[in-house]
Image (cartoon, rainbow, N blue to C red; front, side, top):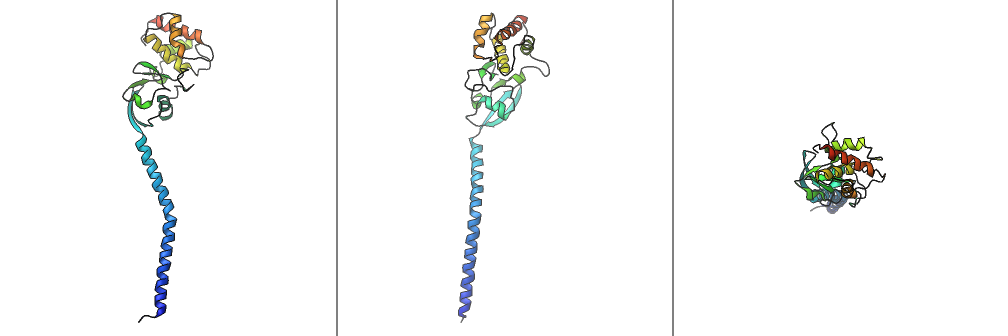
Length: 204
């Protein structure tokens, strides 16, 4: 027959172990739950991204982007192509103009995923290495910019203007370029630069 004290000691040890285990579990649980939450958030974030493939300035890219991200933000934030400027972010100023499959586009209004499989040219890809594009050279020659913020979009639209056959007269150029705002008022010089490139007959 066991001594009563032995039963008390056994029960005491079991009770102590139970309490210790419970305290340990409770202390670990919040951290485990937090880690699980972080993992779930990371997994959810991964699946929320949309995979796209693009050719930008002649280089192929495979990216994962937020489905709501604009083409402008993707170029600037994910690829570091900051030559394309964010102005009004509403498609009114033209600072964000790029070429998509040869057509000028307000990249702030274009959703990145909608451009899957397309060819995009930004101001960084307009020239050939250290050689400037004829339109870039003409803008410099005619002093067609002051602060320069709108210049990338102006040049991209100017190239499209000539390519689209809309640079035959100053009035035609002004009409085509009306979506590009120059806060410094360099419009006459911009028109002169476009007219020169048009008359030169250079391939652009």
